[in-house]
Length: 505
Image (cartoon, rainbow, N blue to C red):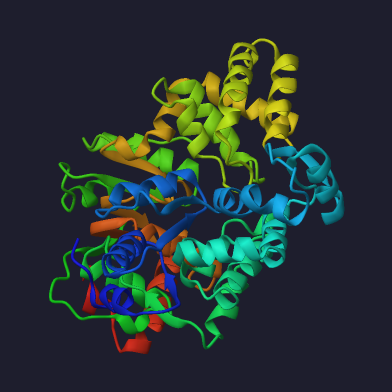
């Protein structure tokens, strides 16, 4: 993929860099290109470390690399701290005979000294009972500060660390990386966006990026251009947000965005003439009820749209949600293996392949008991969650049971991106993209911050066409007019009117 001017400037900038990278801006491509250039220009024996939050992200970086990285480290945060600092140098700090056997996330203590005493006596790295604190990185920092051998090792091996999704680093990780940078003089390339922090619940410290931006030791760069959508849709999404409104670039084509007035009983017929049914399309609504009804309307007009139901486990909003999603897929899809499940585990809690065998045995028991032995299933699920550092609830296990029992509907939800035409909620569409997107203006109050965000998400799912429908029924006509009025107010900062960037019909 050709590099943009923004990306090329980042790649050509030497020294410590912090990059603010919004979704869809080619962050991984930029990261890989920067690593490639730095390695090609490296004239020393030193290598690099590319550090991510998940095994899956590390694999994606490895897959994209086109230079030799066999001597470099490409892996997760915890694996770097454990394999490069804790295991080789704990004995240098605590006891020459100490042997670190591994990490056990079910061993929890309240204080640093309690964790340390257990490590010294058992050779096992545990964790804090408070999930917002990070013993592994606190220990790693303690060791690197205390061990001259560790400092010399890191300084002699690495010339730069590349850290992805920095907004999800906790305070202990941040302190560790800043010590590596400022005291050991190993350069850092940091990528992230505090607006996208998803791990605040477990101690993520997105404000750390602001702290780094204030530092004179770092060059500050931004990636703002959305590579997913066509220019017209980019213009629309950029004008929605004050931070990106100056990226507006006039274009002649106005056919990529259609603003359509219609009635509740004729919108489906009107929208048909603007769709290419040979290309993927998503209708996105605020509620599941509207998405389901609209799918029926489109099907009645001869368009084959599949309503994507809400997964029962989507009601889980705690930090254990990922686990139920992973287990449900493991049970529903034969091609989703134990290794896929391991790859989906958030890095904070696990990084050790030794868990695969025991976990597979527990999952077998859970699968056999989930539908007809709830007591056994509950105790097994509790055991699985506990071994990964989580607490589960009976109501969550019931939602898992319901998700697995409704296999056909659940399959649709998990495979939504493989279907040509879908109707679903905006929330369910996050992370996906479609050639064409249909939305309803009446779903959004552009004075509401959450509605603006949801509208932005819906708009940026579209690649080549966005159709916005304003329902003009008596009950909904007022909100539709308000939508246009508020859009014009937002666009006025760049002296842009609605008719400048869309076709109004």
